[in-house]
Image (tube, rainbow, N blue to C red; front, side):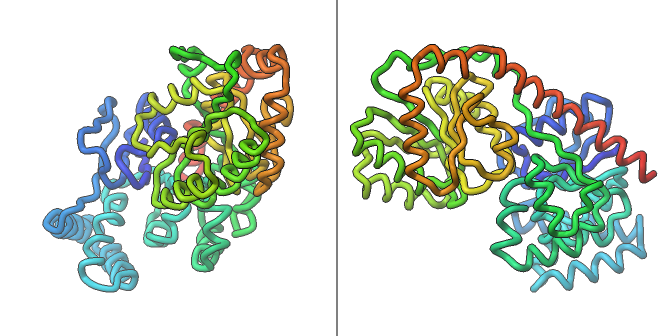
Length: 400
């Protein structure tokens, strides 16, 4: 089977990379479409074919001419309609050529199924849903579903137009599935498959596992610099703890364009001595090491599908306090395997941290670090991940 994965970048995020390798390991031919962000990256499986978007002007010109020429030979009738759409959706010839490089490759690969990883792609490149004849699967994740169509009416209108025409959906949580239904997604075509983490994390060993015997509480958050991640509210919570004379060290690992806002708030609240900011230039393994060395993981987000960072922290045996947003309530059972607090509630988050500190050491160990409940949760998500590949295969067969 020839499966196209529109990831947007090469290499793609870890969770998409796992899907691609899993499909290739099962014997499928997988085409991945995206812009190269790491030139030296190579897929180990020969069944994975990269379709890299050119970035230089000469590369864009040459590839677009090649792709258009090949399409007119393979499918002359489609060539006329797709070129018309490309021109309608482009403001000038340069943009026309760039769109050609990103839109045409899946049409040239004669795919059996096309899996779009981000709902935003439907808005950016409607040519896929309008002209591709193979079944299309769309993954429903986070802000693309629960924020973008609210903040941008164009997204809402496009979703309502195109969601009813999608053959099958993969949602990362039930909450995201229900949100997508508001924009016309057929709930009967949505399969909820929660994110998974690498099973190696269950046996991950760090130089310093936890600091439960330390007088200083080591806290960490991982996530991009964006207002949706709620750093404003968690920093206010840290200010409350500081005023209550709590000894802590809080680390934020984040990348993105809003670093200035976070850094200013840290300074403005006088938290420079107890809050550290690390730009997201660390490798995944380096981030895991940082998380494993802490006592507590915080997720202050305003919205999430399901946070992969939280799942990884849980797999490492690190207690989690999360806002009760999106699908996080599907992962965390309050006071059983973590703590949930209301969104945008700095006082509740500060109180939850204080309550965690007040737990006796035995409860901290039994509730979070012993393997029973944690192992059940991780195995559950690992099992759910394996259901994604058969889901794609089944969908393709249904539409043959």
